[in-house]
Figure 1 (cartoon, rainbow, N blue to C red):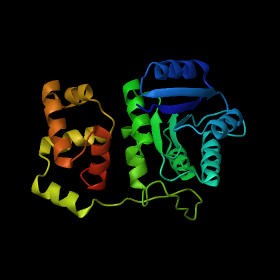
Figure 2 (cartoon, rainbow, N blue to C red; figure 1 turned 180 degrees about the horizontal axis):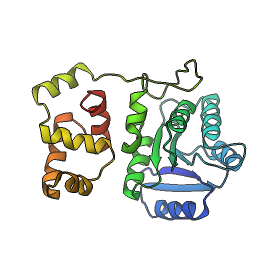
Figure 3 (cartoon, rainbow, N blue to C red; figure 1 turned 180 degrees about the vertical axis):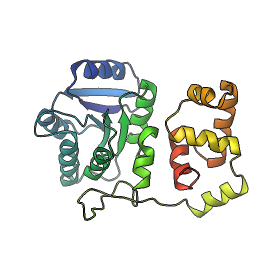
Length: 244
């Protein structure tokens, strides 16, 4: 099995050590190296060209996470790597959920965006999905991204010079699927909570129903939306206008 090579750029020592240790225990991951600031990071990334670079936005010094992402993506383009192989990806891992930071990261070329409070299993999922070419968006910030999305993560600068994006609708076949098998009232309530970032336990508490009932509804939602996981379901629900 080909393992996914990782470089981690994170200035907080304990966070970096913890993530590194967890990743080194995963058979799917090949942890290459780490750096604690942007200047070290760009040298390391250009030298190693990992499958996925995990970058914190709040790096100290002149080269923060956004600048590092931009420089690395530009470097990758200049190398003109073989298009038949997977290109290096950038996964942002941060505690910053401000709209300006999120949009600036994607405008710089980030492929995925995760919040630091997610469970490690979800981080691993995000890494693997990003490596496969998907854009993994943390459910807690999906609404911000999709509300401004026109072409996936393509910058559109308005008069305020802040990157702005708008949303694509669903493909015709997806709309037909939803029209033939629409979500129930309860399923709509649950998908709204999923978009807000609620887990199954929190949904159960919020709606005063059992965990088993929540899992059944979530499974039905995934089937109706033709999605493999909750993140995809949240994205598709927003695109379909099921959630405002």
